[in-house]
Length: 421
Image 1: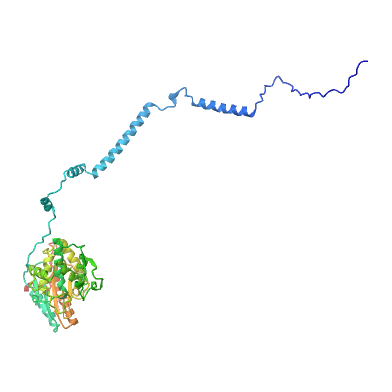
Image 2: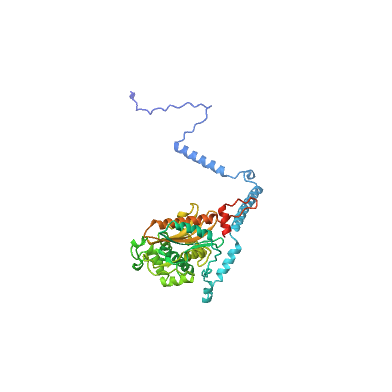
């Protein structure tokens, strides 16, 4: 009997369903993601390589050679014009001949011999020196006016001397007699100081020590400062005049050489009665001068004698700053200008200066008044004399009449003045 086999068979592998192939469809390649990426990168590289390949027609993309050459020539021309303009401007400022001459001179420099060095030193200023001041005639009409003013002050003794710088006419009223100088002695000291500056013996910025032997009492504030303090010489000179500092005066007297040297110089200037005999404030009145001495000294300074024009200008500038304005300035108009120096020792007061009238006239004068100690009448007398002289010099001489204008009718006072003079 045949052997029967069991119907239970071993498990069979699963059948894979086959996709029905459609012969009308295109075949699909199943590619992994890595392969896709590599293909994309390769494609990009190929595109880049293709873009870098030279164009088959390079003449269409590169500029024409003629155009490029023209642009280069144009740029060079513009650059040349700019350089030419800069060079031309520079040459208008800097002269090549001057540079060449300076170079040649510098290359030929040699150390000068002692004789040549002596010749190259600047010459010292030597102002013209004339002892006398030219005067013409005395103004008698003005002198009579001063006499009338003097009669109003019986207890005061005046002395005055004035000169018109336009024509040399002058008036004196006891003006040639010596009188205690008080602080007006500082005027010739100031002139001597500027002479030393002109000679090169002193310098404006030279520092002067205020030693104990020159610190004196009286007017000024330097006496209250620290001993041995130093001041520029020009500041000392200014203090001597502007605030009438006695210590500053003694400092300059010492630096110039002392009172003997100054007195000798005053005589050389033609000052007959001016001398220093005592230190300031000299309340005894031993230092002397005269209205004529001071007026003629200022007249010489004004015309350019004794000191240089530069020093003259500085001297007048300093004297214009005098703070005490109770004497000569009180007789002037507000528009007038005065460079002056006052003096006061109680029994004697005085003032001397250069006065400019707005009309253009300039005159010089000095007035002193001897009085009882601090009597105000002395100050009033000087003010009235100053006012009288100012008005006289302003009107006594007719001003030039323009040719196109009619001559004005002269006042009776002018006619009288002309007949007297």
